Image (cartoon, rainbow, N blue to C red; front, side, top):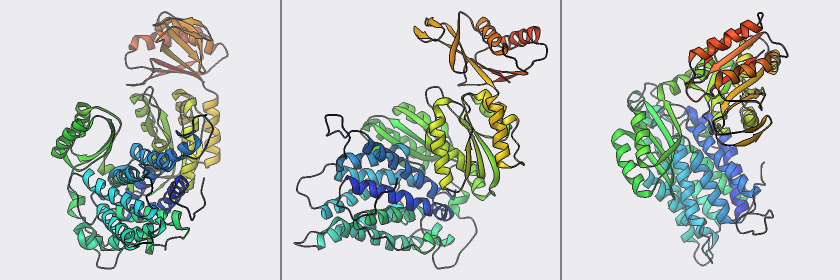
Length: 556
């Protein structure tokens, strides 16, 4: 939801408006910023990474406004304080930071929150904002292992100096927050224009720094939120600068580590200090941001396993994302396809099956369903004008719908087929026709998924009441269409009982997906069981692989 562009005083509403405007500005400029991304790796994703980081920050801020503020004790809704708003904004950026540029943006917002979040009594808004922007630039430089000038850091530093000068120049009449924001924006614009002369890779390509270009958009949104004045449009949104252009690959594009590793880390500050030293020896482009035992770690390495292992030594890494730069470059250069399928599955074997069928698979681990940004990223990486999304679980439908809505704002046509199990997704993929019309393809896939009853076998972790009675820890539960239908002592007998019930209403094809620890003998037994009682029913068997359920059953 968009908010009025201002003017605002420096309060929680101003932060919300700033967030909304910054997200919109980065959305408009995303493709242009991607196009000028040549440093530190020419992988054409800086604009996308900044947008996804700002999107995570905006979502956290929206949730802060929806929840009862901490200073309200009776549970009623109300506007959060400036401190609560700016801290929520920075936290959202931290947990959703993507890439080198997004990680630096998250630390810049944390620096702003460290000052504005303290809400010093009696401080004038202009000098307070100037202090916040100075703190932001300082913390961003400290977060980068080896700062390089001519980058986003340079733009942040110039913005901070301009803001400090504006805050100090007002004399007896203190500068307003809008005055300081405008000075920061103009200082950033001027610094951005100088970046090609500071960094050889930019000069050869004839472009300004991509991360700096994004930061200018964020600072322009801040000024607009506080003043109500819309910033001047950047020429071609910073696509190019005057000067000769050399299209040959620069050294930074040809060399450097092969992988980008990003993860969130729960760890103490001392352990993170040791982690920085370890990762600095493994690769480059090291950025570690955060604090209060939650960190976002970003590094480029040749050995991604070693980078993750270093995180395990330091604390608890999670939301681990490893990207091969060769894949990123190929995607950036590849033409957009007409249609693609994105399928969420629980099991590495299932992910492989979807890949063989031409779909982009999103691997969901037990207890860790993919969030909206992960689904949105998968849609974007499918690189198609039309996308069919198969969520594969009932509890993912809301996230899938939200990701689809955001992808539509990027001009991608997206349809969500409400699959509630991987076997329904396999049935939909079996009838997928990429050459037919989009509407007809979606109707056929939806019909195939809807005509597939699904079952699952799981092991009860504790005593519980179910729709089939009371189960004990260790019992085998047979679920049909999401409800417990059978409680058994062993996997084979329970599976046969589930099959008997599912085939009682007819069927032509049984699909069995075996978990990683289930023997092939069970598949043979179940195939014989189906053949003995239902001669006209065919059976196909797949391996679900690691992270899959013990047994999935589909009946079409």
